[in-house]
Image (cartoon, rainbow, N blue to C red):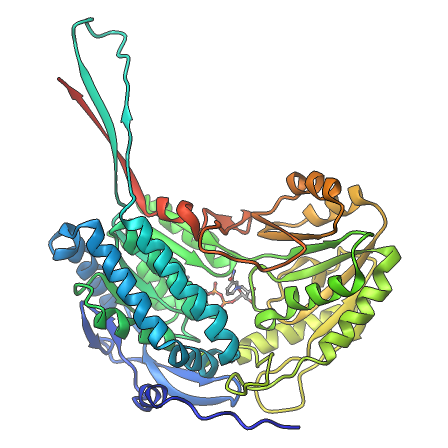
Length: 501
Ligand code: NAI
Ligand code: MG
């Protein structure tokens, strides 16, 4: 049965009809100074549906200059915390009003399901703005008692700390959760009182540009949020090397994260890096195989596997291995695929031809390495960058497909016999973003949690996220945390004030 895509909202259509989109600098919608453009592609149709400006260093310099002026000279720097709070709440209301439109833009530009995006990506994004709005009025320093042993006994002192916005933030985000990543970076930066230059991924800039319109509608002062579009080579690199950038917040590949970390140190810009993963899912002997199979399907196939925390290594106790893997294969084969606008589709196309080629190459590698292909293993027979949900099984977790981040709907299932052994194997990765444990044996679970080298450990679930819970990685999965109060702190400097009375 084929499902015809539902019609889209008028406002979505009107936005798309502009075709040649513009970027936001100092409250103005502008083209790139050199007038260069990049194509916007719909991955379900493999068609060009418009273009975005390709910003060059001149454009980036202008955006950073405006962000700096907005911080130092404009109304933003003088605004009270409650003013920032109210703007963030207003923005969240506008996002809620237009949630369907944003979700449709994600579906058309990225390929993901509009229904899922509206509930998850947009839902989490607007909730995060509300969460961070609350923090804007709760920033505090401390008063510090001092001893000053070398001062005369009659001398008096007063010392305290104040938290100040770190300054101008460069936010560079990927294409897998285009809108949500923009929210993860903007909300804490604005709550802290920073100004921002945001660069969305070149594959998926539309929802960020739409967010720019809502930011203008909410009446943020000009220059507080600037959005420059373009690729990593010309736009991104101009941004990360700019001397007036005080903090870089990045989500994307480990390779680019390492490059950004090095560039940041030249200017001592603060960095938050949320990078790749190869997250293990560990299913202990006592786990109900049905629950494990359902959980694994969500862990790997959510967002078509294009998720940094995807459960891409599935370790299952040998006693239930076959039952879990066979059931998972049934679930994989039953996932309805289709364009994001099809309300029945749960899995859409991958984001781009490049990503399709990358994922297909890994599938070929897995077959050549001798892993057993349980299901999938090829493109779907239809237009668009679709890859069938793919499951490999192997005894050997030193295979390339069991070590490298694939970032597609491809899972490797591996049996284990012994808990100590599986902990060692789960940790034997250059990544450490997340891990999940599946068991009702509380003592066993509690003993395992501290042993796993991962920024997040989920128990009897995977990919669970909340505004109040920090998210980020150990090892090559990154530096610092998104979300939670820890994220707010990373957009603040500490100033120590010391007075002789
Ligand atoms: P990428 O890391 O190149 O792109 C992410 C962002 O960084 C984009 O906005 C891009 O324009 C920007 N960028 C790229 N090079 C830059 C540079 N030199 N300076 C400044 N900014 C730069 O990721 P890409 O190429 O799209 O995907 C490659 C692989 O990275 C994926 O297959 C996946 O394994 C991983 N990835 C991980 C993500 C995560 O959430 N951890 C998200 C996206 C990709
Ligand atoms: Mg696109």
